[in-house]
Image (cartoon, rainbow, N blue to C red; front, side, top):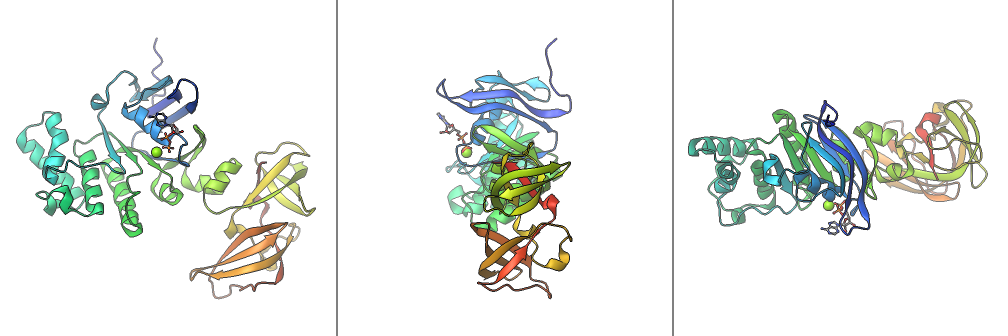
Length: 366
Ligand SMILES: Nc1ncnc2c1ncn2[C@@H]1O[C@H](COP(=O)(O)OP(=O)(O)O)[C@@H](O)[C@H]1O
Ligand SMILES: [Mg+2]
């Protein structure tokens, strides 16, 4: 009997590989399973294989190896227009000679819907993106953000079960981008659409997604909900790529259960969680978030290891204070605190001691 895959999965990549030149794999053994209604983001640096994955799912590229399933059925041999997928791209050109309404009507004509049904759906799609009054305009008479909303409406107008978006907000300014991020997630959840979203912007990924797949070098490095990705990165790449992160290098000198002691390269000792280290003597990069570093001794556990640090810079950011420290030879060690009434303002040149809860410091791969 044919393997129909995971029954809870709506979208499934099984051992998918892709090579464009028959030699180098740009996607290496991709396994991914999405339930219906999920908003999943593929996040990663340029060239990590995100667009290639989306193109294979859309049907514009074929997988070199492996299988892609939609609703439990292999779609490897189904042409793009029969997959029922909506798409939005960064520079997804609207047809310039057609009005907005005609642009939206087009995918419905292709699907042979009657005139009155088309008009009703176009109106609904335009209202959805709050562009109801713009049906008669041509794309050139719209701002970038308005065009992008129309592109979104066009991807949704035929009520696809699955929508793919490849850096759709890259060309917009910050304010509009943030507004559209909110609009897109709201629409996706309201309409129950399954979405695969591609971006290289980690803030966008964290704020919009149910889960994020972090790509590097053609592989998923970690697939997790945003909070887990940020708070429990599984390797150094993810720790560095997501959010601001401090790294200190050293060697494991003891491990007991879920804590370990690391001797840093300058000889100081710190406590950490052994994540990617297994034996005494292993080299490691420990990772700690700037907001989890404590320099108020009253808040530290009595037997926590502390580290000497020198304050190099104080940056006032309004809601938070940001300090740059020299710690164990690292002059880019960042600490952040909230601008609370009792917040301590450190001055450059000051010598302090810092520490953290052992569970906030993760010993990762070297
Ligand atoms: N049509 C193509 N022909 C040959 N190589 C390609 C093609 N498209 C992408 N690549 C290569 O595949 C790799 C992954 O690209 P891509 O999937 O576009 O990454 P991303 O979207 O993460 O930036 C890159 O090295 C890129 O140069
Ligand atoms: Mg891309």
